[in-house]
Image 1 (cartoon, one colour):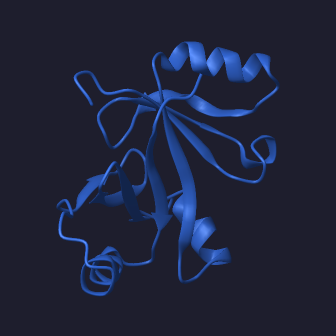
Image 2: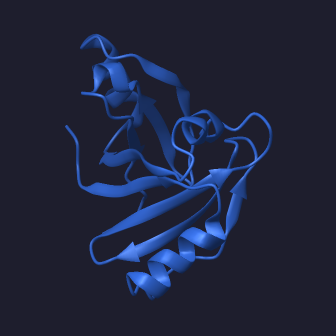
Length: 138
């Protein structure tokens, strides 16, 4: 059911500091501009690495879902992994049928396509994002 690994989400208290790490220490040369999604409670940048991406995410606003993660992990760290699926609604229904708790309804994510998140307790301790493959991708 899952397709390619689209990205690994990394929470950070500071996008500026995270970009410095990926650019100056790891040598990343292709990093997108900062964007914000107030409705999702995050600001983000993508580090393009070969056949995938690292999504750097920092809290946006007082109700950001990233704040709880950063309280437990003040320096940040791996927040989620994201796999592509052909049909987000079919993937959601399949996850629910298999007993996986899906967090909320499908909504538009940072790539401009529909996403859902699957609860870590049902996914081996890892928050999993499923995103509909962007049209015209790959």
